[in-house]
Image (cartoon, rainbow, N blue to C red; front, side, top):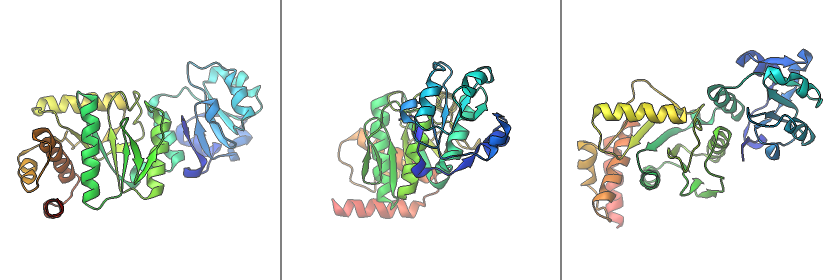
Length: 295
């Protein structure tokens, strides 16, 4: 996909982008030109798009993007002449992933800020994806409309999303924006290599990061920093990696959990992450009681 599309984006001018991010702009009088989407693949360009030429792409793709309706291109300063030759305004910058994430989030309308964002990490991709499903089910049981980003199945509330994995920065921002527009109150993301490319969460503020791994304090801190370094998200410096704990394990005992010890651990992690997000213990107990009565 590699696009933040017009249907879920806000319109911004090239002048705003240039001044806000410190980019050059040629010609200068193009500062009033408005872009309605951002794409880094010519196939994803729609009329009104800002096309970002990736560092390893052939400059000839600029002409393809312009022919498909790009209103502007973003290129390194060294490629100004090639950009000018295609007849559309050029923003000039050598983008790093952090700036790309911020720009994509900006054009998408900062969708991560409208939801509670939960990210699950760990050592085993399949286990992470299973933990994501359990957490999403639990948050839904607490009354939250939920979106999921996972190689095992992404969805916006009850609607399945057809995504091309692993996802990049623009793909993630697009998906977050779709889920936000659908009314999701919580987003659950699987931080594994099958689901996400490196830096894919740049521009995303994470509220809760959790793992089912049994880790001590030092190991937890190391995993948090490792995952953040890999995927690029931001998180409050006071936050710690959430793991199963005595309270969450005790609360699991208030529910009848089918599937054995691993199912109990997955529910325990879900409870611990919900508690870290500020969900009241009484609400969790009520939800578990209702779930138990319905079985």
